[in-house]
Length: 557
Image 1 (cartoon, rainbow, N blue to C red):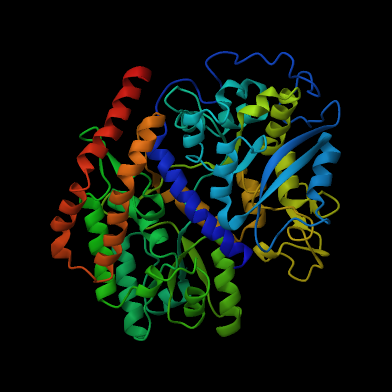
Image 2 (cartoon, rainbow, N blue to C red; image 1 turned 135 degrees about the vertical axis):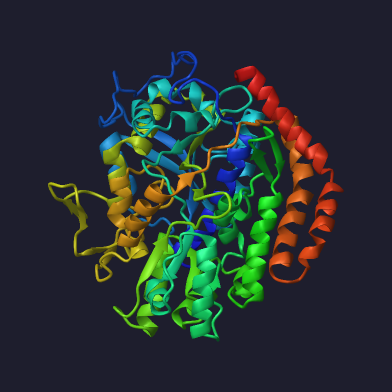
């Protein structure tokens, strides 16, 4: 598995976590997101090493050497080595040494849960996506970060400048507090969407689709020209494609299924995600499959977007597929070998619109961090808050985490354009492939654990392809993010109850979705399928979710 493939696989679970948070976590309460309701707990006795009057955009440097413990996820092909400069650079700038507890990527979620539940976890838990914190917040294993953000000026500044206050309020739990701090994104677009062979669409006279119906028309023209092809593919067991398609049909699905509920704004309550819009979506993909336009293997094979789909793309058997910015690079590399450079054109298009409109997923955060409760007992706790505020939200820190050291690994011109020096490469994004030293594998910069969290638009565009820049422009100008769902935070006992109730409901929905799409179950049995879900106490489950929503709304307004 390549690094990019690993990232794609992790992103799948991340999207699911984000969707869970959209349904389960709190929304719409007042408070401005970037501050707590009071000045927070006293930090007396826990200020050793902290800076006085620490401000936004200032270099944090602890007033004495300190060590902070952190959980670190090792990607299989980019394990930490003795040559990684990133930790030396962090220490040089901040006087902070990181004491790492390493866990493997393959079972990182399980290992993290075990460590936190047993009270053996390090202070800092990075690579935390919204929704990941819910179970630990309910059990009191992690700190309410909303109590401490007054000590984090960079966080407060960029929440305000990037208009993220309401989104922060969406993270509040049943007690009105939020328990993780996310990575902040100046621009937020769906990470996964469709990647097309524009040259082939042009060849057959098909326009770049703005809707799913227009996509079907284009696929039909390609099928007529290339009858041996199945021009549309997913590569992520269908979970990616139905995730970004669902919003345009008025539902949630796939990686974004969350807790399998959808907010019905007309009736002002949560309903089962398998609603009329979901049925329309299933019927649409079933029609593609029946007409030979959809590659069925890509909805069943567990290959995380690499391997089979890339090979079919290179071989001219697939001409549109799910992917992210990294997938564009994968497809380009493969097509260079078969079609040849300059003989094809790839575009990353905005997710097509549908019956619900030109709608995409709500604006989202990216991965951030939690702090275990023991962190607040450390005499250097305030210094820890200041350090993490710098590490996660200071622009200079973010640039260093992505690119390394200015003047050493990269240069920056008067307009802010970053250029990697020729002796260095950034293989994950195809930058300077002839460079002898990879800034990720050899030096540790650009690592998923830290570098991906908070990004300005300029930083995001600095290492991505022109296709991503065009994609951001297209989504920003032609699509509307769906409004986040109202909050329905569950308490600890309700979380356990809902998990037991949701599992069979979600399993039944996911299993039958693929059966319907791939022709293994006739669409005439849709009503029978809904009856099967009802038999799994769907009404009791929806009652639990809607009860939590009403309770929070009554308490918080």
